[in-house]
Image 1 (cartoon, rainbow, N blue to C red):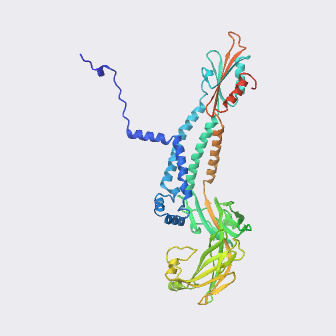
Image 2 (cartoon, rainbow, N blue to C red; image 1 turned 90 degrees about the vertical axis):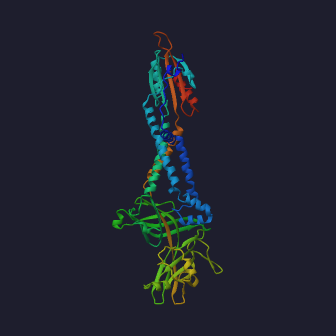
Image 3 (cartoon, rainbow, N blue to C red; image 1 turned 135 degrees about the horizontal axis):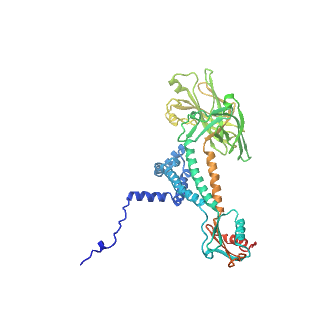
Amino acid sequence: MTVDSRAAGPAQQVPPRVNPLLAFLRNTWRGLVSMRTALVLLFLLALAALPGALLPQRSLNAPKVTEFIAEHGWWGRLLDRLQFYDVYASVWFSAIYLLLFVSLMGCLVPRTLDYARSLRAAPVLTPRNLSRLPHHSTATMDAGVAEVMAAAHRRLRGWRRVERAEPDGGRSISAERGYLRETGNLLFHFAMLGLVVALALGKMFNYEGQVIVLADGSEFCNAGTLGYDSFRPGLRVDGTDLNPFCVRVDGFSARYLPNGQAESFRADLRYQSGADLETGTWRPYPLAVNDPLRTAGDRIYLLGHGYAPTFTVTFPDGTSRTSTIQWRTVDQRTMLAEGATKLDRPGVSDPAERRRTGLAITGLLAPTAVFRGALLDSGFPDLRNPAVAVDVLRGDLGLDAGRGQSIFSVDQSLVDSGRLSRVARANLKPGQEITLDDGTRVRFDRVERWVALQVSHDPTQGWVLAFALLLIAGLGVSLTVKRRRLWIRATPAGAGADQSRTVVEVGGLARTDRAGYGEQFERLSAELVRGREP
């Protein structure tokens, strides 16, 4: 007779079928929230930030980005498509940033809960055989068990410890120390998480703007974005709710070494914010490089300086116009500058007539003039012997063309088309003038200084500093504190009523960083077992 073994044998249990999608998501989540993944993402974040430091960024210098793309051809265009010129606003940088945040949260929360449970738990039981531990010592002492335990408690003050009864009538102590190591480790990672969040919030609510102000008592007020030459708002800033304050630049001074190297710069400011705006009170402040003015929650930095020539144009009918416009520095060593001062004839309302009579004064400005033949150059960066080499152009300046143009130059296409033509060329010193063919006189009056200011607002700056300090503190604690475990067992050496002698065993185990624990254990055992210093 044939017997079906499958029927006779025990019933086989079929494992439940696991949904592949759920298994994939579970494994992905476990991998994402591991500390190893967090470290890899942190490395990737640092690596992804390198292009932001090595390549020009569109948010900082858009013309430089355009120039870089033109110079590098298809390679430059490929980098543009991959958002390498907008690194910190790119999709891939934001993805790494977000994944790092999720990974840190996912691995820190359960780790913190485990740490909290371990803090509430008593130290582990004393092992049955202490001689198997890496560090072990035993001796017989002329003292009772209670006396030995009392001395051990005094010596282990500061350790987490618990005393337990042993089955053979003895007593034991389980002691641990070094829990601050994990505290420092968690503090380090939570501070890193806080730093990531603070930097992200800073990018949302910060703003930064640059403005050039003449150092002749001119003012700048932080009332809106139109007052800035360039303005970079955060993601949640629209420029309508800026912190109000005003700055007046009364003067600027620069000190140079004999070889022309800059020694110091200082802008003499007066500012008002808060209640001073209502009362009209101005407060002085000497603004220097790396010494910003902090007011109204903003910081005002001194970025640079330069020169602005003043020209007076007197037209044949006796009307005149005076203009002081900053010129761009082209040589930082000698402060040689170039620029364009553009003027419309006053009283002309006809658009066609305005396009025929516009004047532009373009050329070079040298703070310390040095003539190399007929060519003007600058021999020193300070304002010692100023002079200009200018071309005077007349015609259509393109100011009503409906498109923006640089304040430092004229539209070259207007010159090429003949709509703007040169009518005079001259080298001038302060007080000198030239007369054009229609009787118009152009006089070079003087040179003013200008300063470039940067206004920065970051409401999370204090949090970033606090988290950075906590990060350093947590790292220091986790590197210096060592986890140690120590067990002491005291057993009566005599039989019956003789309790005057005690066998003492001491065992030690280093949880982390075993180097150096041998010497520490020897000192402890010398005091606990031998009852004296080693």
